[in-house]
Image (cartoon, rainbow, N blue to C red; front, side):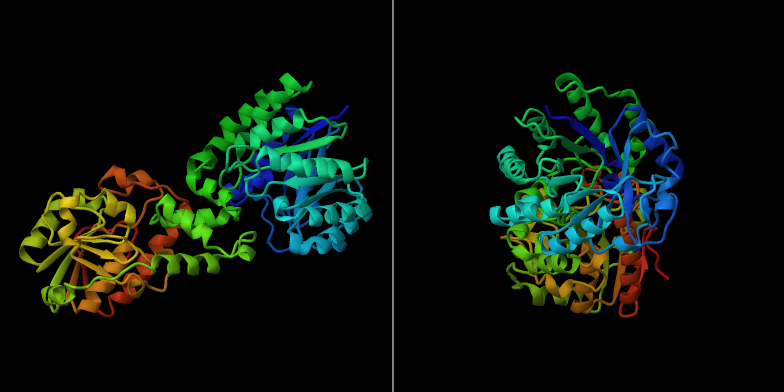
Length: 526
């Protein structure tokens, strides 16, 4: 009869949510809580030679470092780390002596199969339990997967994993791969399963393995609170409860609830993980989840647009994340729209040599609305709002580069809309070229405010008065005059956008006079 082992990967996979910055004391508390819960295998973090060690992070460069969070009394638990092929040197591992981790999970992509398995062979020779993590298992053809299994048999590791890296496996995919492994893998090797939750199938797939007809020993991965990149992982607390009720599990759930309450809930509030439409779409197209994160952080795309971008991706770019590639693809997609500049000459006559007030939707436009009204009345010759209709003032134009904001706008305002060419629109005043308004800072390359300032420079405006370009607080609820415009993203993204706007506006100020009407909180103009 099969035996099922639970492997918790919170300190490793969960590290994608907080840059592995759990804090040293929290690392020890999590390990202690997992032991108290009776978890069979505890993954402590990443093992790599490409970083600088910090005890508050779960990226380790030596086994002595990770040993500091492993208790002396192990109660039969197995402690492991994960190492990516190419990011560690297996020859440098000390011979296993029981003072630190017991095993190493070696992860590799299909293109690196032979090198990854050679890593596994060396690690095993050093005396450690070896877990073979063939990432994106569905990327192998049946013939390739059988060849992988044959090579794994030669290494004879502790466990061989089916890895649902992108969270897109259906039950039929899992069972197809499982029975290929079941019928061809040496009996001495355990079968593992690592899942992600992009399609909300991690829990049901784990249940399917619990009830599958096999005598094999199984290892099923999970993380407390589902903490993991993007859509997250199988929830440890849910899965262990299921094992207790259906597979003679003897796990304690209360320690896991304490971990959630005292440690993980704080990380979740700062950078939430879990099911989302972008993560679903990335799984649907079998692409790396970081692509979904990148496109979602733009906050300019509809779900349909994101779906179309994923469909345009080259097959050889889907498995490994390439930021430059997705940036170029995003720009190409956004630049494919039509241009209609029938009224460009009229607009240029309105703006050339004049002062223009631009009004973004930052919260300062509520707090300092009198300044804006006074500027429009006495100082500015033309007024333009950005991605919204400003209720306090009947602006001359509305500039839009965001399709979502365009769709939200009252259709009666279309006749004064200046839109960029990425927006499919009719009956607007002017549709200008999206690509010509981009800047060189990736964080704000197509930020609407930066695009409008550049457009006004192209039209020959003399001066720009700015209201509402405040920058971004890391508390998203503090950013917009209208709470319906609020969006959520990582703290690092907000910070990069603030730095980007500061840099771009400083550069633009060398070419056009810029004056702030409202007080920016996070953008600096020297």
